[in-house]
Length: 194
Image (cartoon, rainbow, N blue to C red; front, top):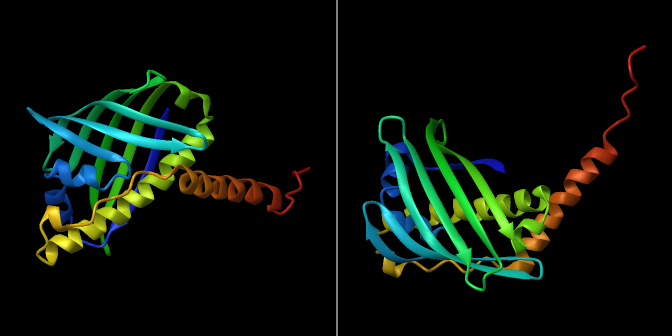
């Protein structure tokens, strides 16, 4: 399943791209993510905890930078993991493209996500909504971490990001789904041309 999203960071592209050089800092922006080992050759071992409704999944796996194009400001990360209780697997290729905007930097993200097991039982809409919520939180955390670094704080001094809360994510995703339905329901009637 291909999920696309984008967000803007109120910082120059050079500063945001430099931040993307520090993979542990980038990972710290994603709610529920934790890097546990640096494996060398731009590869990392880590965990991701996500709760979707009543299901709590903790994936352990690896992530590797497959491509980094400094001129195009493009990075591709390949990640795969399995739920620690054996209830499923996830694989994802994430491509991030940075571009300059009048207000700072636009980050366009494409996530090619493959799920099996418990997480796969949720429909595309729910997974897309949960991903949208996580990306919004990621964008906020990225901006906050850049601002903290500008104030001279080290990565250890920056408050950590809490795991992705199942209730909060479910509530925010449900709100997005209801808004989608309401837009379809309340769109003005458009008669078909004769």
